[in-house]
Length: 270
Image (cartoon, rainbow, N blue to C red):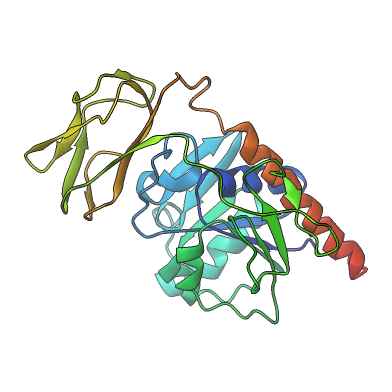
């Protein structure tokens, strides 16, 4: 039986890991925030709960609602069926945290890319081996992956002397001054000038803080809270903006390494 992988988060790193592990034959399930607020929704799986499904590099991820649309079963009956159906039919199931709490499916490995989402879940840490793909060293995880800095893309084994720290911010952040509905009038990749409007927050313009290129932007129509990041502005134009960054692919390779290392350590089969 293949080891079942639960990936907590739907951001770039979570998506890169899902694609990598899926291609290696592991059954993968993603947990998404109920209201995804990812600036890079256009290149990762964070929009699946809203859109119903999304295909990245030929791999389809779908939401529970999308699965239920053509089902005659009740919601309670179909939840585990949805996860198992996706695993057996070469798809990735995307669950909300509320969905996950109702499922009885058990996972062998948990990969954490969204710490705040992980903290809302109740996962039996004695039954699941955790791999962290977030900056810093986390005691609740069995393995930590370095995601930033000169050692990015390596497993932080306890017998190796490597620092796992946060990298310096490379983008200018545009944040919300109050709670309101955000509507973008610029698209990722667009060139912007300082004090140019990139969207509306309620009736107020959201202004670019400097000249540059819109690297990431909140999707339109969501209610954002005060201080929520609305956009990232880069000094230089980002190439292949709709492709997952190479750094996330390096992290996904390290996650696969940690997974295989643990399986070999415990003499278990894939």
